[in-house]
Image 1 (cartoon, one colour):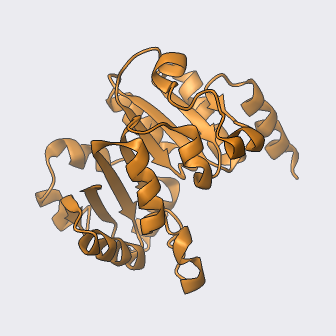
Image 2 (cartoon, rainbow, N blue to C red; image 1 turned 180 degrees about the vertical axis):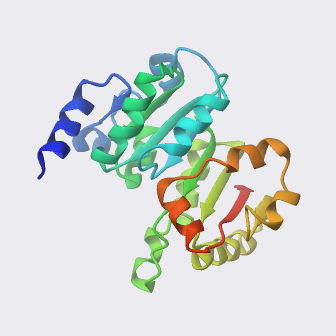
Image 3 (tube, helix red, strand yellow; image 1 turned 60 degrees about the horizontal axis):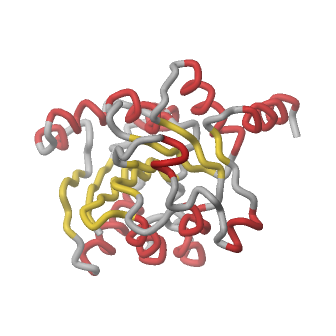
Amino acid sequence: MGKDKLRRFADNEKFDNVLQPTTEDLLKKTWALKGEWHKEIFENENPITLEIACGKGEYTLALARRYPERNFIGIDIKGARLWRGAKTALEEKLNNVVFLRTRLEFILSCFAENEVSQIWITFPDPQKHLSRAKKRLTHPQFLERFRTILKPTGTINLKTDSSFLYDYTMDVVLSENLKVIHQTIDVYGLGKDKFPNELNELMETKTFYESRWLDEGKKIKFIEFEL
């Protein structure tokens, strides 16, 4: 393991905006922050938004800057990536954002029923191979977990370059009779005519890989739906 990665792991241990529950607590479902995020972390009752598989946290940070009246949690298992978002949040003194290092399989051990208002899934691995279907973050198995922690009117937002994942997600949404709020196969093209200005402005936040894919001529897809 490189020295830079080791340094980032050490920093994460010191950062007060990085939470790293133990596997033992998550397996036992006894982690103290479950159901206590408003009280213990944010010290307010503002709505909570999650960015799932947040990577460097570009969207977590963009959302936190735009909506100071909301709370944001970036979730990822890769601490070296998550470090970048956490460090930037500290540098900018963003008090409405924290980062959680955990596997998504443990999400029900981290959040209580109806504790979350919104979820963003930004450019996840599409997991194209059939044997990896249950790893897709919009697979019904994951959506059922998200449904548990989301409020009844909570929404899922998927942004992806993958036509495969977009089509798969639309199939799941239609088969489960879920309500689609916004959707487009070309965020920066025809999609602009479909979205309110606020959503278009938010879409201008681009991750490192998204910018590269756009340079390669790929179209970015988006869907927002309720569970």
